[in-house]
Structures are given as C-alpha cells and as structure tokens.
Image (tube, rainbow, N blue to C red):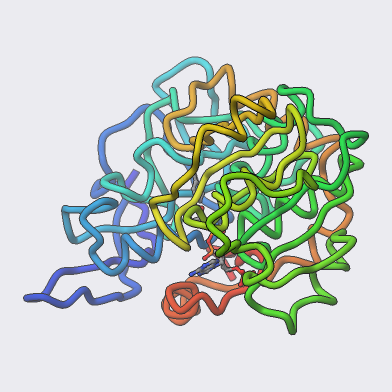
Length: 331
Ligand SMILES: NC(=O)c1ccc[n+]([C@@H]2O[C@H](COP(=O)([O-])OP(=O)(O)OC[C@H]3O[C@@H](n4cnc5c(N)ncnc54)[C@H](OP(=O)(O)O)[C@@H]3O)[C@@H](O)[C@H]2O)c1
C-alpha cells in the first residue's frame, strides 16, 4: 500500500523543534502488526511535551506525536483484528518513539490495540482519549477500594484540565457528589455544568499550616496535580477513604506524615494509563462506554483539525486549554 497521508511532523533543527504538516507515505510508518486509518486523536499534555522535545517523552526526531488514536483497521498480520474493525489505541509507546495519532495512519503492535467497545463511537472514544481513560482508571480505583457515593464528597484537582474535567463528568455520572479545585475561578459555571456541586480555589486546597492531619472531609479524592495539593487531599480524607494520584502539574514531589495512613487507613493509589496490561484496560473502557459515559461529553469537547493542533499545543503548555481537545484527522 503506497497511500500518501498527512501528519504533523516535529523536526529538530539545532536547539529548535519545528512543527509542520507534511505528506508521508504508509511505507515510512514503523513496522507493526496492525495498520490503522486514524479518524480521531486527541491532545494531551504529553503530546505537547513530545512536540517541544522533552527527552522524557521523545528522543528521536523527526517524529509524529499523538498518544491517542481511533480508527479503522486497514490490514492486520494478527488474526485478532481484520480489515474494517473499529479500534482505538492509547498509551504504550504510541506518540512517544512510535509515530502517533497526529497522522492519518498509524502502524502498531496488535498488543496495543483495543476493539472499540460496544456503546462507544470512534469520536466518543477520543473525547475520552488518554485523559478520559486515566480519569476512568481513577474512578475505577475508588470503586475497587470501596469508596462509594455514600462515603461523601470526592475532591477533584486540576479540574478544568483534560483528566480533571473528565473525572468530574465520570464521577457525576457514576453518582458521586464532587467538589472541583481550580485555579480558573471564571470556569465555575463550566465545572458545575459537568457535575461539580461546589468549586473551590487552589489556595483553599493547598494547606500551608504544616499540620500532619486536617479534619477528614472527603470521601475520596482524584488528584491530577501532585505537590502540596495532593498532600492536603490526603490529610483531609475521611477514615478508609481512597486518594488517587496520576499527575504532576503542581509538583512531582509531596510531603506527608504517615498519620493519614496509619490513623485513618487512607489509601493512596497510583494510576498508570501507559503500560497498564490489556486485561485491566478492557473493564474500564467497558464502563466508559456504558454506565459511566457522561451526558456532558460534548460540553467539554473542542473539535479541531490537524492544522489547528500547533496553536493548541502552545495553549496546553500555558495551561490555557479547558476540557478535551478532539482532533478530527480528516476535517
Ligand atoms: N498517570 C497517567 O497515566 C497519566 C495520564 C494522563 C495524564 N497524566 C498527567 O496528569 C496531569 C494532568 O493531565 P491533563 O492532560 O489533564 O493536563 P492539562 O489538561 O494540562 O490540565 C492540568 C490542569 O492542572 C491544573 N494546574 C496547572 N498548573 C497547576 C499548578 N501549578 N498547580 C495546581 N494546579 C495546576 C490546571 O487546572 P485548574 O486551572 O482547573 O486548576 C490545568 O488545567 C499531567 O501531569 C499529566 O502528565 C498522567
């Protein structure tokens, strides 16, 4: 197949990383089992890091970012998939060193590919994308650790971001009362529309008292920012509550005493969406396709074409994007 297609290509020129939309051919794609025509991708913070040459994400250029892709199988060397199957790929090495979803075709190992679950369209699957899947994993961790809607309000941090906004929408759909933490007070109405019952400022969620424990007020917490906001959530969580940690936008480090864990039995659960084995992925996608699929999916979505990706990379790096940015590769 010598089909030509469009892709964003990042090239390194001296110390600079240049973004261009280029024509590529399918032969240039990496070896792999499954060739997929990508209909939709989405923009995540990690894609922006790849595009600016962050070595923790991508070291080899020229490169096409895009850690998410959903589309139709064109051909497959692995019998699990056949031409015409609707599939999605998130995480693993996609968009890191393997050319990703900011191109109209990808070729990947069969082990990375998920058959589109019944109840979800290709478009919806990429409104979720890695951010929504990570939010889904966080809600799954609360449920698995017996933190239920009856245990009280759940705190969500970084709430206007991709993971945070999806966590609000999913938790609300799953019946939880939740309180959103944001640095963007002007987005209060948006957060309430997604399902937050209250919105508090970052300062209110960032305790500076130095006390090892605070009054237990949260049934649980979905943290996406790390740092002292995570530490504050841990020491404000009620007996036996669950706190999840997936992100680092405030800081990679936090300080805690052992008291919330040994006096209140608080559970801190790490969330990884990248290397997670397939048998742990499928139940979460199934929940997202069915009872956890938010009614507000469109409210938090901004759809763009490939040509608009570069501007949106600049916005996400400045923390200025709200909700999810869906990329329609054929717009
Ligand atoms: N573990 C995993 O598998 C996994 C998967 C996906 C993402 N992540 C990580 O999760 C985090 C969130 O990802 P995302 O895609 O949602 O990013 P995003 O869309 O850029 O959102 C991050 C949000 O964090 C808040 N924020 C920004 N700077 C902050 C600061 N200095 N202090 C406190 N809050 C701050 C902002 O929300 P407000 O203005 O509303 O406060 C911002 O919208 C990132 O660190 C990302 O790398 C991890």
